[in-house]
View: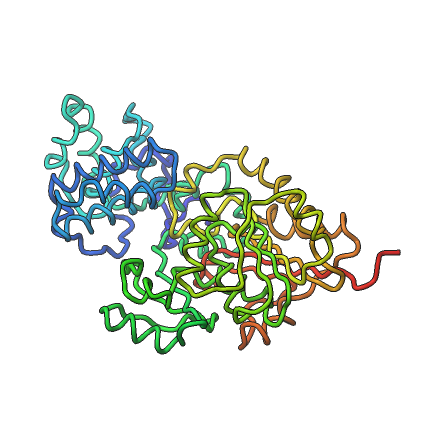
Length: 472
């Protein structure tokens, strides 16, 4: 977005980016979501601050801490209060870049305060809900005086401002913006705006036990409305606020939460009719379930991972889904050597930055560092090289990430092909018709999905085929 332009294209005043921050009033008026009544209570505000502090102090994914915290404290709150706490904490993490910009103060009035959970919750309430600073000051105790001056200057403003720099406007870390610009180009504003919107809940139906229509009916019986996903024939889409893990449909193995992009990447493995398939980085088994269904419980399916804990979760999910042809095992060099050049399909769902999942995991972007990216790229290459040894002549290696960065995606696949001249790219457009069906939404040769263009998480897949003849 050009400098000096508001989010909606309105020319900005000829002032420095910070000097007029507290003088211009309501220059940008985004559509406001009506605040939940419980969300305006001091009780909910204090609980949200406590939850955000727990997330910040843990270093673990926010959804894990959020649900653990709520299990411990849920009896203190009414259902509407619990919903408000979850929603406000999610909004704070999603919009942290914008909130911190406002909390820094202006050139004339620097705040001198380090943004924390209390300030962010208060700022969100003022900027998005029109709350008054006075009602939020009890959150600050002895720090009330310093907070009061800052929060009072936020009154009458909204979350957006014409002089907000791009990283703050898009609520992403400064260091990663050049990588995102290189990936999205002219679509940057559209894509990062999509990443700021809450993701819908996608579930994958289990063809071993049900059909999409029957699964939708089962969810409807539990008052969960759904609609078919646009691309995946196995997907149903629900509201962002929906929760299926406590439903009878989930307990019976009819549905599993899984973003449509993840479903599509797993379907492109084309495991149907294969005798031997390996999920090299299986994790908790989400894509393993897709492979098992495609194989119709026939053949041999091996789910591998370095984490025994994740494999234990995979075993439970496979059992619930009625999968009988899969085994779970920790990655082990002797097993890999013993099965070299024997596997029809090898799926590598590689560890990555997770930049494609920021719609549903906004906390992840604030934990990510440049060093993480520097360390992940060579690690991905090493994993690909190890997995490639399993692929039989004529077999396929399918490389998948939930990243949108070229360094982890196209560049990683191209570097692999340079190291392994006996492999070549098979365009996703050739595999799509028999695995997914319908029109392929990307031109190929790789699968490259994004929130703005496709309404999915950001996913990448490269289908790499090993030559049926030994390299000369």
